[in-house]
Length: 363
Image (cartoon, rainbow, N blue to C red; front, side):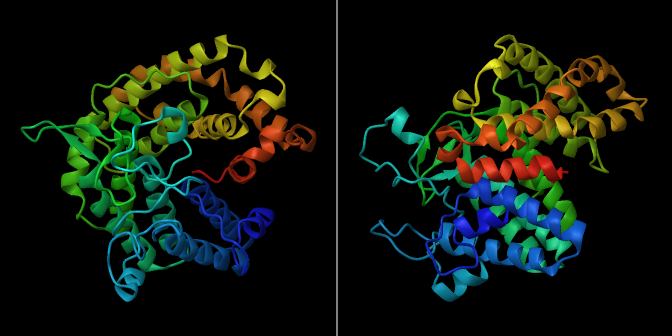
C-alpha cells in the first residue's frame, strides 16, 4: 500500500493517478491497517486519498474543453459538496463524444461514470466517516448516492424502472453503454441500505425501494470470477443487515444458488492451470476476496432457522471452493508470479486487490 501511494502521487507533488475502483479498495485497506495498528499515519493517508480522489475525479479532465467540478458548482461550493456531480472512472482515454460512433474495444479505456464504481466509493466514504469520526465523509456518501441515481436509472416511456445504465457520460447527460447488469442494482440496494443505516438517514428510502424491486427475481449465474466474488461480497453484507426482510432472504437465496451454478461453470475451464502471464490477477483476487467472506455468510445462515435454511445446499456447494480462494492469494503473493508484463500492465489494481485479500479488509 505504501508503494501504491507513492506510485500514484498520493501525498506528493508528482503526477496524480487516480482510478475510482482501485482507490475505493485502497481506502478499505488503509482503514484496516489503521484499525489493526492504531497508527495515525494510515488515517491521514485515508483523508489525503479521499481529498485527492474528489479533486481529480470530481473535476473535468485536463484534456477536456470543460473545466471545474462535474456538478457545475463553484470551486468553493464544490469543495463543500465534491460528490454532487458524481466522479469520473479515471480511464486513460477521453469519453466518447455524443456524435461519435460506439467502439466496443475502445470503450473499455474511455472515461465516463460507472454505477458499480460509485457504489464502492460510497461504501468507502461511509466507512471512513465511521472509523475516522468524520461526518463530512458520510454526508458526501449520501450526496453521491442521491445525486447520481436518477441519471443512471433506466425507465420505460411510462416511467416504470427497468434497470440501471451500465455507463454514463462524465456529465451524466447520456448513456455511453446502455446495457444493464442486474448486479449494479443489487450493489446499489445493499450499499444504499448500509450507508443510510450508518448515517441514520432516511433520505434514500425511495431509491432503496426501486433498487429492491430491480434486484428481485433476477438470474445471477455468471462465470466471471470478479462478478462471482462481488456476489458473495453482496450476500455477506445483506445477511448482516439488522433489519433484513423476507424479501431480502429471497434475494440471498437467489444469489447463492446462482453463484453456485456460476462457480461450477467457471471451474470447468480449469482456470488455474494457466501460467501467470495469461491470468488477470485482479479478477481472480476479487473472487478470492468473495470466498473469504463465505464463512461469515455460512455462520449467519447456520443461526437462521427460518427462510434461509433452504440455501444450505448452495452454501455447501460454494464451500468446496474456499481452498481455491486461498490458493489464488498464495499464488499471487509469490513475487515470482508478479513478474509478468500482464501483472505490471495492471499493477495498481493488482497490488491493491492483493493487499485487500491479504488483509481480509472487505468485511
